[in-house]
Length: 226
Image (cartoon, rainbow, N blue to C red; front, side, top):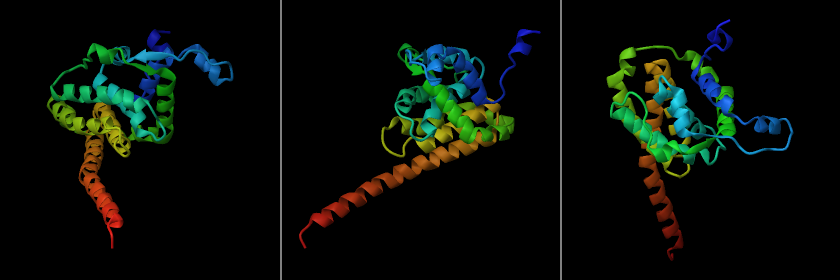
């Protein structure tokens, strides 16, 4: 039996990410899940994660970083991953073929168990979406198109970077869908992801100031003498 037969390549982007992360999970953390005393938490640097992604690293990295932003009740991780997402999108816009991260970002460490938990939850609630992804309209995921996609992705990634309510979940979902489209060469997923993210950011940009103005006017009128 060959090595490839012994460990077949997992199908689906989420399964690939899980296969990359799981070997880095500390055995003590697995024992802690079974009821043993918890040990030190295993982490993986963003640089090591990027190196392990190999082909289609932009799509896989954007997906693994966007997942914590998609799911409710996930804290700390979105703040860790937002800036690298902006850097990756900007590099796509500049036409880079492979991601490059400055040393400060390469050294940023992510908790392996927490990332695996996010991947598991994503597989449970949205993994069925991957079954619909397959190569479609290849011209819209080629090198030239990728530069445009990267430029457009900067907008939702910047939204995720803003630490305010409603700024990360829908943009995170949009980035994740776009990333799956890049991985599977599926232009339909790319377009749906970009539309969802950009429309939501536009709603926030237009409706946010209007809502603040309304609240200030309401409070001022309420406090004014009759």
